[in-house]
Image (cartoon, rainbow, N blue to C red; front, side, top):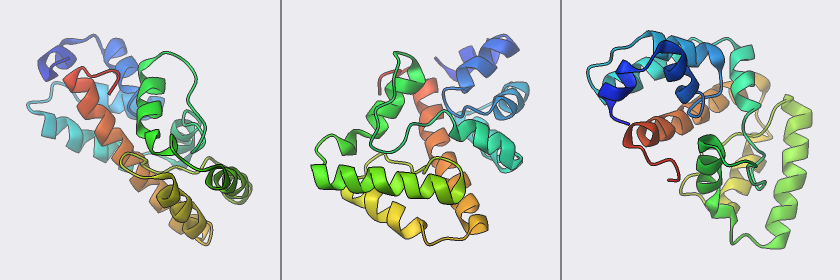
Length: 169
C-alpha cells in the first residue's frame, strides 16, 4: 500500500497492519495514532520513537511473535512470510550449525527469558550463530538494549515492505 492509503485506513486496520512489523499492540496503536504521515521517513521516525518508548513488557510481547533463529515461522500471514524470508540465511546451514543454534537458543532463553532476536536479513547461519554465542556473554541490561535495536532493524525493514506492498518479500 502507499503511504496515502495507510494514512486513510481506519485506526484499527492501520494498527492491525502494523502488527506484522512489530507485534507490540502498544507500539502499533501509537504509530497508527500518529497518522497522517507526510513521508515514509516521518513514519519510520515515529515508529522508532514509539519503539524507544515501549516498556520492556511491550518489547516482550513483540518478541513472543518471533520464531527462534533456525525455526521456520508457521502460517500463511504476512508476518510469517516475512520471517521466513528474513531467516533464509538458514536454508543452507549445515546440521552442526543448526544443532549449535538450537542449543544456543535454549541457553539464551534460560538466561534472558525470551527468544534470541537478531535482524537475520542478509546474514548466514554462521554469522547468526556467532552473534548468539557472543551475546550470551552480555548482562541483562546490555542485552535488552541490543534486543531493542535488533527489533528496530526488523521493524524498519517490515515497514518498508508494508508500504511497498511486498507481502512475500
